[in-house]
Length: 431
Image (cartoon, rainbow, N blue to C red; front, side):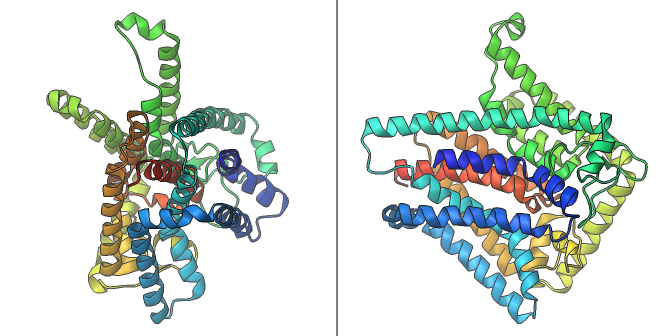
C-alpha cells in the first residue's frame, strides 16, 4: 500500500506539468477536466479495491470515525438538497462539491487507508510497521524539499529558455485565466513584477503548498547547537540551514500576502512560549511584518483594491440572503457559472451553504480538533500530527484572503498524508 501511495504522490506533485505539457502542449487545451477526472477516478478506484481487500477492518474504522463521517454526509446532503430545490444545475452542484467538500473526502478516505495499516499484530509487528511508516514520512519530507529545489531550476529554465516552454504548452506572461494556457510567469499587474509559481498552477497555490508543510519542515530539520560555530560545522545544521533558505526564499518569491501571513502564523504557533517570554521583540517583529505586507500591497496596488472591494461588496450578499444561495454560486465557481467573488473563504461558505451549512462546517472543525487531541500515541507520532495540525490553525488567518482549497493538487498531497497519519494512530490507540 505504501508503495502505491508513493506512486500517487509522484502523480500529484507533477500533475500541473502533466496537464500543461500533455493537454495544452499536445491536445490544444480542450476539455482539460478529463485529466482531473482520471486522477480522481484512480483515487476512488484505490479506495474501492482496498475496501474489498481489507473489508474486515472497515467496521471498526467506521465506529472510530463515525461522528466526523455523519457530519460530513449531513453537510453534503443538506447542501445538495437545498441546491436542488433552488434549481441549481447538476454541473453547479458538482463544482460546489469539488471546491467545497472534496478535500474533506480526501482526508476521510485517507484515514481509512491509514487505519488499515494496523491489524491485530503483536508489539513486534507493530514496531516493524512503525518503521515502514517512518521511512515513508522521511521519503515524503525529502520529496517536499526536492520539489522546492526542482521549482527553482524550473523557474530559471523558464527565464533562460522561454521559447521552449511556449512550445510545450505555457502561455505569455500574464495573470491566471481559466481555460487558457498557464502563463510562463505570473505578474503583480500589467507590466508588473514576476511572481514565481514553480511547478504549481499559480503563485498563491504554491504559497499554499509552502505554508501547509512549513510546520513539518521545521519539525524535521532542526538545529542542534551549543555554540554559534556549530551551525556551520555540523552536517545536520548545514542541511537544515540550506532547507530553510530554500523554503523561505520560495515563500518570498511567490509575492503572496496570504502565504506570508500564513508563515508568520505558523512561526508564531510553533514558538508561542518564546513569544510570551519575549513579547517586546514579538511586537517589533509584527510591526515589521505589517510594514512589509503594506509595502507588498502597494506593489500590487490594483490587486489590493480589487480584493478590498470584493470583500466588502460580498457582505451584502450574505445580509440579503443569509440562509442560502447554495453550491456553485461563488469564488472558484466564477470560472464556471458562479457570479460572486467574495475573496474571503468564510464569506464564501455563508454565500454557498448559508448559516445552517456554515454551522455544520464549524461543528466538523471542532470535532476534528477533539479527535486529533486524542491521538497522542507516542512522542514521535504526536510531533508529526501536531506539525500537520498547526496548519489548520494558520488556515483561519489565510481564509480571510484566499480560497486555498481550490487547488486539488495540494489538497491531495496534504490531506492524504494528514489522513494517513491520523487513521494509522487512531487504530493503534483505539480512540
